[in-house]
Image (cartoon, rainbow, N blue to C red; front, side, top):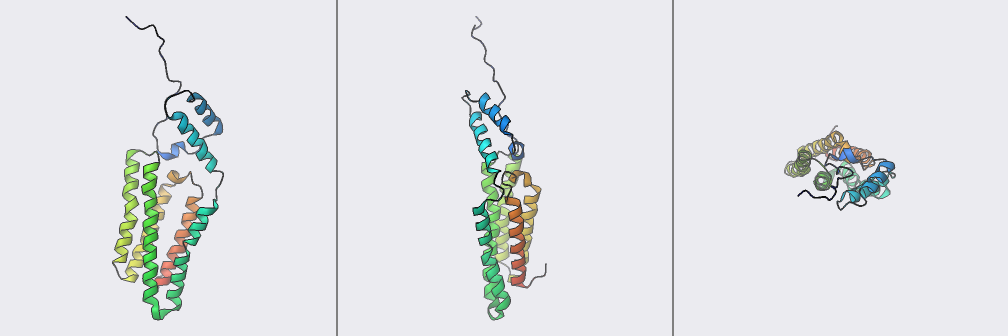
Length: 204
């Protein structure tokens, strides 16, 4: 015997797991609509709508102070060791080693950012796998650089930073929720590479 109970239909289809750029900028009116549609739903879509509203609110600050301060402060070891290598040639090898070691640490750091992003961002499987693979590549380049003489190691480090910046440029849409990130990364990369070049006597 067929049931006489009415059939329930979803008022809206759940959000799809599309690449990050698909969910980046959503108008307040759409977010309010989504929150209303899913307010009585047992699914987590209502929660996600709230999360997207919080993400949109983050966009209002294009230049957050703390990340910029930390980023610029991270340039100090680059500048200090490069300057000492240039003006203290009697201990140039020591300063070059310190400079390249710090650069290798930072190169590993900027690559590891994408390991965390791959775990947190709503990406497709192919995108996530590609991001995970890339996230360990800068660390491998840094390791190779430290195993080479200072000059050759410096070349590998500069190449690694350039490759990282190119990767980020190709995938800027994944980072668009942090509008300040790309301009800051360009500035930090440029200054860091100049410091590596000066400290090791390279000519870019």
